[in-house]
Image 1 (cartoon, rainbow, N blue to C red):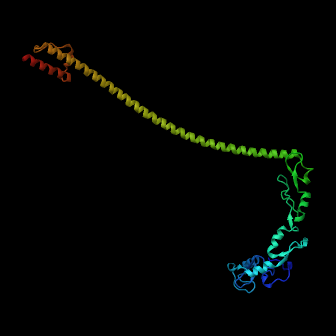
Image 2 (image 1 turned 180 degrees about the vertical axis):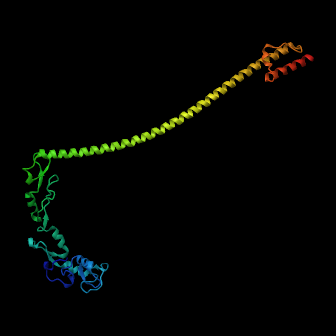
Image 3 (image 1 turned 90 degrees about the vertical axis):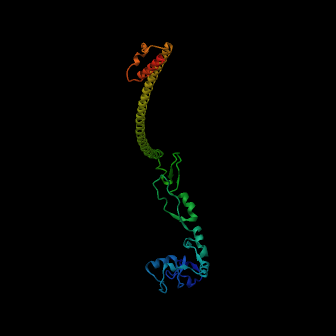
Length: 303
């Protein structure tokens, strides 16, 4: 809707009137046929129609354009009375500055700023609207004005509730609220800790199972190593016995050779050496060695 033409002082050009509401243009737009409209008026019209309300030519919202500059200048220079004229404001200003004036006009109606306080039941606050110039006076006597309790409980109370306010009751109510909040928080913390403990417990069980498997595998490896070590020790012991036996046989053979060399031309069949009694088992390596020594001895005797 446009500005009421009755608010204007002096003559208003017909071209500055909206073709829909017939009031002075507000947020004007222009059609290709050069007819001008209030923005809200033409948008509302095009919801149900698809033509210009003045000459019925086809019209779409995408075809709307801003008003010509010279028309906007003429519109801005129009003199208009304040909308608070009935409350006593006699201000007349240009159309381009009327909005700024009305936002600051002392005769404009504003809502009371008393909300009733955070902990009180008057959540909607004071419903009154007063002139801006009388707002401070109203706030000083408004029954919804709040102030801190003079008894020191720290609560904000309304002027009309001074006689009904009880510090003990208010503090008891707040204590119950705090207790309920604390219980809820404790429960939340308990659930969170239980969840964390369950997660850690599952993790420890999995880790314990892995460690048991690793220990069993290490035990198997240790048993295999011990078996290999025992086998190596047995082989080493057997090898040492064989070396000792071979060393013994070596000494016996050396003594036998020395005795043969001392005898010189010994008889064809010399007396058996006591140490060589055990060497006469046929087919053994020692028997073959003794036989070889005997043949050498016979050869020496013949010569």
